[in-house]
Length: 317
Image (cartoon, rainbow, N blue to C red):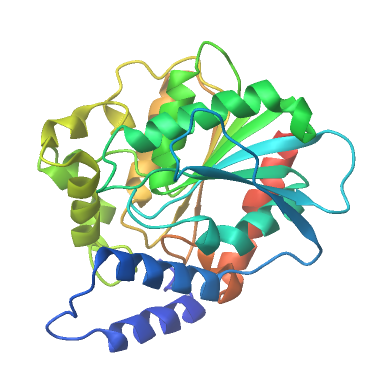
């Protein structure tokens, strides 16, 4: 097995050295600020100009926004990507992902619609999913008005956002809105973190020391589901618990070798393949969870970023 990419290992060593014992107490807002700061610092932005626009999203809660990223040099109706961010349903926002969103728009030659959905614990399940479904409907109905091609509409989500993308894919299965779905190191099963199922091999081997850690997943689960731990078995929360996974759009799933969620992504890909869906699964050697974020500090992560964008662009052609 290849070792962890040296540039990633340097980042992990720095994070380990910065830890305090006992751990420093930080508020929720401080945690969100740290996540935003680290995300911006590690991300790589676009090479050219990318325009930003925040349209009104009728029916959305006051703190829900949709930011459109459009390559300034592009013309004509463009493919459309609804991007759903990670952060365990607790962290992450448009400011954290601004550089990454603009670069995805540039690399895919598409309009990226980044959704700032309501976050837990203030807004537990199903608030984030409700916001996702609302945004997907609005984008489908208003694609032409924003210069997009509704026939080339993709979902893209990372980690918790990948979980939301899967739930939206299930929800709109009959309508066939999406030409393709790109899942980046998705959460496909919360049951192990609620004590309702066994942990996977990757969950055991990479539980600590590889950026995303098992205690964080347990915290995210408590924040998203509250005291209703039985909700972890709901297919909208744990897609691997779904009985019927047939009739879905083409799906591409990407994982990192040293990610505790690695096996969840692979297992979900296997479930989709067994149900005769079109599925591509790829696990990148030597890298970890959130590799799209780390494109600015790791050549290996940057190469994975480029591959994800190129393959998504091809799927939307």
